[in-house]
Amino acid sequence: MKKALLFILSCILVVISLSAQRTNCINCTYEQERNPKAVVEAKEVKKSELTIYPNPTTDFIGVKNTDSNKVTQITIYNLVGKKMKNFPVIEGKKYYIADLPEGLYLVQMIGADAKVIRTQRMTKR
Image 1 (cartoon, rainbow, N blue to C red):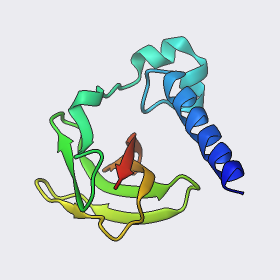
Image 2 (tube, rainbow, N blue to C red; image 1 turned 120 degrees about the vertical axis):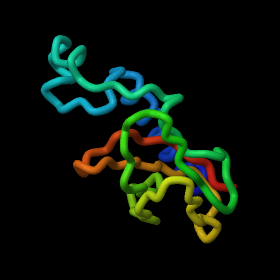
Image 3 (cartoon, one colour; image 1 turned 90 degrees about the vertical axis):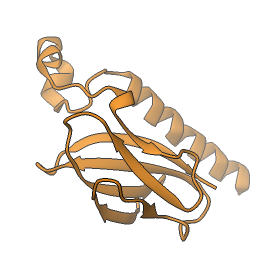
């Protein structure tokens, strides 16, 4: 049972990694991913400009946002896709996550237009 669960989680991580490597465009629509000219025109976000810290974490996380990308909301999902936490973003604020079980999570940073700006993996210890 444990081996099967580990295998499934490993497969999910591989799929996530491969889909993240497929394109450099963070905010692409389906059509933009299929059309290389549209990808060049799409807005790109550098990883160093927008990130969750510290990672791995234990009790609190923060958002490092040095670019003009205005993150208005953080949503944390487990690897099964269940929404675990949701926070409105306030500059300089830390967000309490100590009540989450240890494991790997996906953190979505959402902009004012309700579009996902970036999704980042986070390890909770």
